[in-house]
Each structure stands twice: as C-alpha cells, then as structure tokens.
Image 1: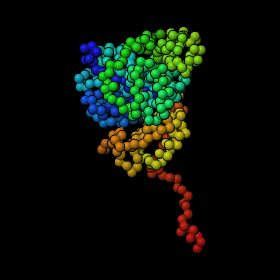
Image 2: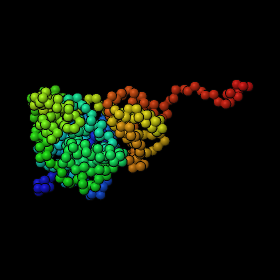
Image 3: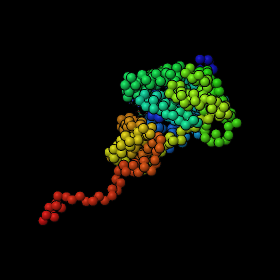
Image 4: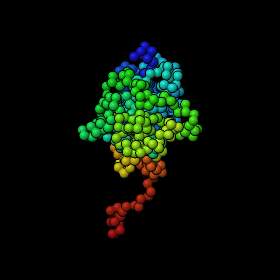
Length: 416
Ligand SMILES: Nc1nc2c(ncn2[C@@H]2O[C@H](COP(=O)(O)OP(=O)(O)OP(=O)(O)O)[C@@H](O)[C@H]2O)c(=O)[nH]1
C-alpha cells in the first residue's frame, strides 16, 4: 500500500441479503480483541429502526440511517456522516458501513470514488458480503422485472470477500451447491465458510482487498454515476435509478447485459432472448435500477406489554404460513412480567427469541419508555392483518367477556 493510502481511513462495506448475518458480523468484529476503534454506520430498510438497538453497546460510535436504502434515498446521509467523521480523523481507526439487506452495493462503492473530499480522505478496504447458506439460492433465483435489480446477485458480484454463513443450517451437499454457484458468479472473491459470522478479524479488516480495476473490468463505466447522466429524465432520479452494465462471464457470448441478469447459468436463456432488444435501450438508460416494489417493509411501534406466549404462537404460525414471502422479521419487545428487553429474529420460516439477559441487544435504560418495535419485510405484506395479529398478542387486552363457564357448584346448585 502506498504511504498516501496508509494515511487514509480504511472503509469496510458489509453487505448481504436480509437476515444473512451482517449485524452478527458487526457485533463479532466490535467485540473481538483487535484494539481498533471502529465507527459503524448502520443503514436499515424498515419503517422502524431496530438494528441500532441490536448492535452491541461498545465504545464505538454508531450512526444510523433509516427511512431508506443507502444505495438510494439516504446516499446523501452517507456522504454527510462520512464528511463528519473525516473531520474527526485520528479519533478512530476504521469505518464499517452496514448496508441494508436490499442494497445494491454499487452506489455505495461509487461514493468513495466520485465525492472528492471522501475520495481524498478514505480508502475502500473491502466489500464483505455475508451469504445465508440456507436461503441465498431462492433470492439468487428470484426473477425480477426487466428494470428491477436483483440485489442478492449484485451483492455477490461486488464482493471482495464472501462469508458463506449459517453453514450449520445446511447439509454438506447443499453447502457445496451454494459454494459452486457463488464461485461461478464471482471467481476472484475468496469464500470463507462460517457460523454466526465468526471469522478472524485479521481476515476482515485491513485486508486491502478492494480492487477498482476488477470492477472497471467488469463494468468500464462503473464510475459514471447517475448524476452524470443528464440525458436521463428527472423521472429516473425520482425512482432512484442507478444500475450498471456488466461484462458477462465466459458463459455469455453477448458481451454486455443488464446487471440483474448478470448471473449466467440460471437466466441465460432469458437474457439471450433479450439482448438484441435491450442493447439500444441500455445505451440510454445505462443507470436504470429500481428496487422491487413488491418487496416492502411494514413497521409497528406498540405501547404496552406483549404476552410472550401469545406472540410466540402467532409469530410461529405467521412464519410457517407466510415464510416464503416474509423474508425478514425482527423486533424489540417489551414483554409482560419481564424487565429484560426481548428480541425476536425471523428469517423466512426460522424464528428465534432472545433477550438482553442473554446478552442480545441492550437492556432497557432507566426511564426509557418500553415500546415494542417490530418490522416485517417481504412481498405482499398486509399491514392491517399484521397489526391485528400483533394487537391480539398484547397482554391485558380486555378479552371480550367470555361466556361464563359453568362451574361445578353451578351444576350442583342447579341440581338442587
Ligand atoms: N443458525 C444460524 N443462525 C445465524 C447465523 N448467523 C446469524 N444467524 C441468525 O440469523 C438472524 C439474522 O442475523 P443478523 O445478523 O441480524 O442478519 P442481518 O444480515 O444483519 O439482517 P438484516 O439487517 O435484517 O438484513 C439472527 O437471528 C442471527 O442470530 C448462523 O451462522 N447460524
């Protein structure tokens, strides 16, 4: 590394699909014994911020960016926070940015090359992509409409290093299949298999793994941002479009194609058909990229305490029935009869409860209002239905006066 690069603040971008294990990785790094002071920038896709409470208490500084995805609406926030941190250079050793599970990493990476101040002060050390060995296949397979990006594919494609996580949830054969698939999508990236994102920090930070050259080989116009493309209509900006073309791997004979078809093996037939038609359009809409509008987030903040048993039963049933479409669910819970802050984590059908007593999340602070915050992310979510379900799990809700059951005494009395 050059002297100039050495004096810059190293940046690590942590990406990976919803629920893959990014926050688990951040917590692992923050609690590891590396002697580094790390500033963390959290971005989450959800109507109600939760991750902030799930990142462990530490000396580190944590900045939250909610209400949007870092690759779109909150990119300005990212630039602002980075500039703030740059002014305090020397007070910390590194910055980690956790992107939302629905972020396309490309615009985040571009930030470090197109903004002059940031470019001069920071160096992108690596893009780490956490992959959920159990669920990634279905997200890679998800066929999106033509102008919609497949974030799961992008995240793997842009990785400098891949953490193939949750190996405990799959068989050796399944793991091999995922490994093959990922290797095929991104040959240069090292793949590290792990459980609970537990990888030696020396393999994650200060690794100097990011290569702009590799990205420019993949996409020569990588650094041409959406803002440079004023031939795009304003409408494009409203939609936060900012995609990229990629060079295909050797499977694809056609040279370039739109990134959401980037992966050769599975959609090959589809994009071969499309290439002819799309080529011209790509020239003018080079930076088109939209998120899948079908994937939405619904968030609730509930006053009052929840009944753990009712909630457990309701959530278990919901995840069983809707787990395919319900990519991610999570919540901070105020539970009747407990002084601990409870947490639930759902990834598709898998559901896990834990609490501050077990070291997950931070306990309620003195005087902190005990509000439950719950987020669901997925396809075809119905707010009313979810709210009704949650409300039915509140403790002490006035039960409708149940028909008074007869007691034995009543019977006895009647007999008399
Ligand atoms: N069984 C198993 N569970 C894991 C592993 N790694 C993480 N988890 C669990 O998966 C769930 C999601 O983990 P997170 O670290 O919150 O995932 P994330 O990528 O930050 O999630 P989003 O921010 O919502 O995208 C949590 O319940 C974790 O405890 C693993 O290796 N094995």
